Length: 214
Ligand SMILES: C[S@@+](CC[C@H](N)C(=O)[O-])C[C@H]1O[C@@H](n2cnc3c(N)ncnc32)[C@H](O)[C@@H]1O
Image (tube, rainbow, N blue to C red; front, side):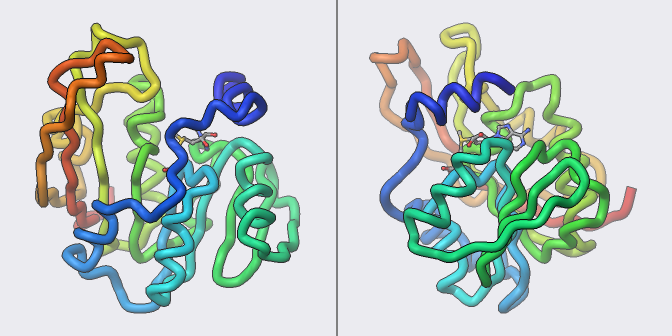
C-alpha cells in the first residue's frame, strides 16, 4: 500500500497518459454498454479516459487508494468537487464523476451497481495474491449483465518483480471462469521493453460479461 503512496508522492507515475487510450477508443463500442449507464473505473488514478467515458454520456465512478490521485483528477481538469466520508472511504463528487478514495478491496458490496467497467492498468497493478478479491469486487459492484473492457499486459514474470504484474490470457480465463463470459477482442505483440529487461511483451483486450450471480 505504501508503494502506491510513494509513487504518487514522488510523481513516478509513468503509467499515466496525457491522451485517451487508443484501445479504449477502438473497442469500447464493441462491448455494448448500456447507453448513459454507470461505468466503474477501478484503480482509476487520474486517468483521462474517465473524461472520454463522460463525453460518451456515461456517469463515471472511479476508486483509488491515493488521495493525491483523486484530488489531482478534479483539480487538473478544473472540476469543483464535494467530499463526504463513507465508512473507510471518502466519496468525491463532481457530476458526472464520483471517485472514492480508499481500497477497492474494502468497498461494501453493492455500493456502486455499475452497468459497465473499464480496466486499464488495474488488474495488472494488483498483487497476484489479491486478484481473486479484485474479481469478487467487480462482481459485487456491478449489475448482472454488466460488461467490462479489460486491457492486459503480459511478459515472462521472472524478468521483473512487478507491478505491473504479468497477466496472461490463461490467468484471465481462470479468474473470470465462474459467473462471467469472456471474449478476446484483440491480442497485440508489443515491442520488447529492453530498458526494463522485458521480452515477449503482449497485451490483450477482453470483453467480459457478468452472466451469473455467485
Ligand atoms: C498503474 S496505476 C493505473 C491508474 C489508471 N488506471 C490509469 O490507467 O492511469 C494503478 C493505480 O491504482 C491505485 N491502487 C492500487 N491498488 C489499489 C487498491 N487496492 N485500491 C484502490 N486503488 C489502488 C494506485 O494508487 C494507482 O493510482
